[in-house]
Image (cartoon, rainbow, N blue to C red):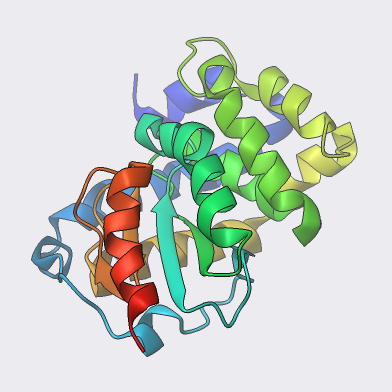
Length: 228
């Protein structure tokens, strides 16, 4: 059974249109890490290039004028991303973000159709609800991301907490323009910034190579904060 056939069997008929688009997006995703540019994985990228607008509003925590900016590329079906958001981010938020020292910019890098669907849902709510829904999706990741059964009911169950109705849920998952923007973001991150896995972090433009623990983040952040 080919990819589109398998995808169609696992998704509800209400989102078949989205499934077709997501299958195409998944093909792009699978090719991105093999490109020559992506394999270069630059240790540092110009901040101006990294922060250049790409058609999607930034999802960010912390003040825009913070001394340190962390850009995270994440996939909603990535277990390591889930671990960061549920176990590390709360401490990072308390110690640095809420204190106005750090700004965290969350960017989507979906690795599969379900990650695209979850990212689309997080984009279809108002900006003040996006992080709450992202948090809920990561906390419930095991219920929808890896199950063999149709993930649509579980995704809808989580989405309802953010105010989705069945109609708005279906409309979001069939938004081709939004899907195109997420696909373009993925392609740009892979080809220009060398992103090939998740989570990938850039701290003031420098690729963060350490394990994403609060202790390792502190080692990278504190020297930057101490600079004049």
